[in-house]
Length: 414
Image (cartoon, rainbow, N blue to C red; front, side):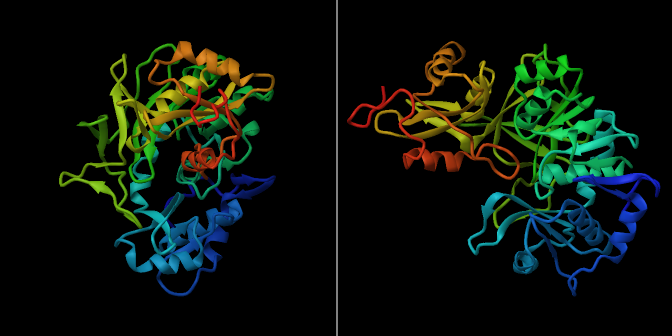
């Protein structure tokens, strides 16, 4: 078997929903798991029970069968001929589909994930005595990696942050852990979006050691750092990664070369050059401390009044305002501006939308300041990120109401 069961037989490997599975029990379940006939990829549904999902993934890796994580058996059959040679893991991405209706998937070898296991364990200080919580569905690559990584180091994987010594989480999920009354885990490994300074300070004040990393399903780990809330040092290349900051019209685009890159994207394309560097189009800049600050995907750039505004940059400022749980920013078509910046915020009880809009004037430049505001629960992708596409559709269709400030009768906003 691929060495992903590092714990001794009597150690707890999995603890989900109150159900515990020892390492020896998991090994036996993997050995007797029944896979579809043939040598093609095996589907592992997004709604699969976590223990069953881990068992299926390990069984496929053990027997040399590609596994489509987050897809059905029909999906697996549909992409079988398109998977690159050597594919072990086919990872679905948030909500994207190919033209024929099959999911867009990232094809990678298992070695491309396991190569980063030891560097991450060292960076985060994790070992076999840890109890490591995953805080999202295993069909999402960052959570599946967290589970497999915990098994690799011989730790316990759980879905209960309240009993964990370490947790993998998005900033949104970390905020809930920080605000809970229960004792927090001693370590939080944060990814999926930039870590707001205020949240970093709150987590540190509660005694949580923060490790932040930037990556993507196609690239795996790219940048990382142990977080110091008082120093804007940025992130540095993850061990084994070479980075290149390449100028584009809207700033600098981050390219990476490492042993962790995926083989290809099925149902899409992987942007890779002849020298082995690849990118997903994220824009970056140098932080004051000399590291790299990730601004966000280039396709989230909003062109307004001739200026380029990065949605994630505005979102980080809004999320730092008092009374704001989370924020998403989109551009909507505008006759004079090209695009108009619109903000949708999740508010703490008792917080007024008008007060947040007023406070934003001190935090943002005039070009970054949203022209329309809505208070609503944010729709999210499977990985927990705000689903900007769905928000934009809701705004254009008027399903979020009139917002703030209220529009004039001719459709223009104040």
